[in-house]
Length: 333
Ligand SMILES: [Zn+2]
Image (cartoon, rainbow, N blue to C red; front, side, top):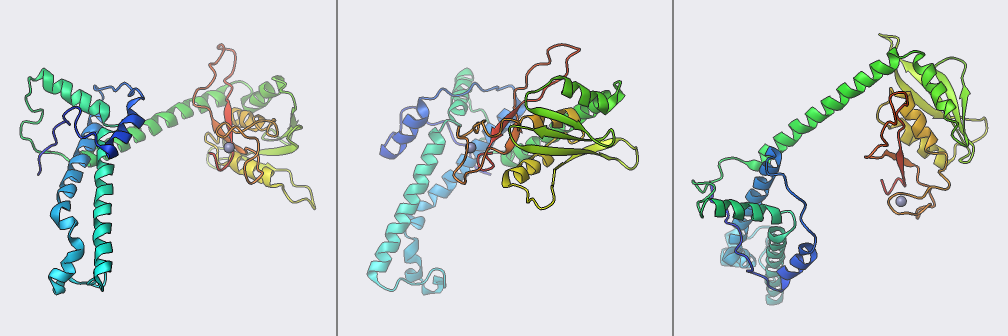
């Protein structure tokens, strides 16, 4: 067990190497922090604990770390194939230089972490709490009683599992709603067709669960086929492929589009898939959301689609949800 670090005294240690970190990060306002959140507290404590561990590492630098190249000389038993005795004074001198430079770099890294934007709000909070408690230590024992890094991992994992579960439940509810709605999947296709998106043509297939979408401007025809769950006879997934004419190799763009479509979430959701396919209609005119260019260095179009984090609101009860996507190059995604 080791002692916890105290917050840094304000205005100290602004030497040449550390000042850079301050000007770079100091201008941006730190994001507001929710100190009521358990995970926030644990993640802040984990950062402090990490800093403290680094302090212990730094303590080994003087003199042991700096003099490391001398160890094989001082005791020939300690010379190993990795750490041989320096063959000449100039090699030894180089090794000593190297040892110093490495340690200095570690110290600079530590300083920028300490004063960095991530820890700024943590120090502010700690100082405020110390003031509140009239200088009383927050951890009276002065000892870390938990490994906050491990605790943070556990909390993050639990939170993720909860979120995943929530998403799964929501999707299941939506799916049940669509399936129980009048017309089922046929109604979904009809509603999509009625929107009359320019350049998007829906071609009904041989049965109710197969169709094709022709995107005139993109020069793409996407085939869609519902795959039934053998146990329940309900469509569990919609598969996507490109229309292969004999003697024609699929274009690179076509392949990339189909790959992206088949790696989408909500594979059961035909409405989602139709919106996603339609988002490729203007692929030859839509620049990448990230780099703002139409083609990347490999002369490829933005073939990746990512669901936008903020989705348009559903206009009214009678209107259906419309999904919107960002266009990205594969290398920008
Ligand atoms: Zn891009």
